[in-house]
Image 1: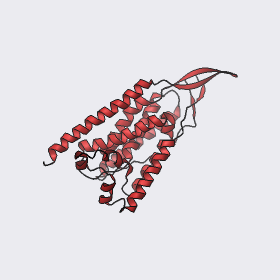
Image 2: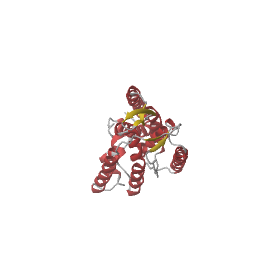
Image 3: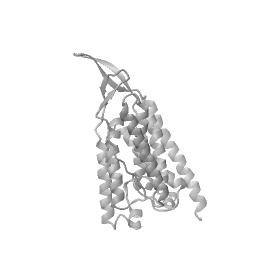
Image 4: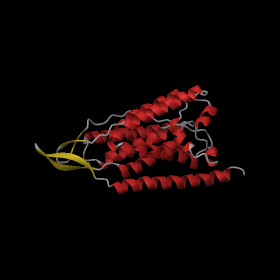
Length: 266
């Protein structure tokens, strides 16, 4: 069972350059965040209708992660497990975290980069559990949500000159969140900390590669030259990062295959 909680708040859309120029951050509409929220709630409703979200049989039927089944070729469970939750409290914690984090992160990164971070981190968390975890049923979106935490850290560090005191306080809040959640996970055997760690590392690495590195450009307007922020991250870096993440996940799955091939009787 995975779990992650988060209380987030973003800036008001204004950022200040080192020269004191006030600029407005480009901010995409968080469409995918709301789609993901709806999908998780719908999936939970389906769990309830088919026998209950705490019923092992129902969870396995709907795609929860069971490492022996993944080793048997059911790799789709590494994705479907991200949309299943074990109990209403599990769903509530994760959806609150997704609502709080997702709107800001999708706004900062844009929907495509946000999708890459969310799904790569969620899969990375499940692959980490496949490569090193036991054969217990696992489900939950918190590997992906820990990835969003990592991506926000990457965004704030990469744009350190724009946020002032907000950046410092937010980074402290995120660090505290990570430490508390991981410590709680290590003390509770029912929590999948491997998924949390896998998602966090994926979100950090992919976040640094995909983060918009804002710089100020001056443009002419009828009222004179005005500043705006432009993204200095090359497109090829973004593509290479996503492809590289896919390759690493594939290699980790192969490692998991070898591990379970040794453990399972022929």
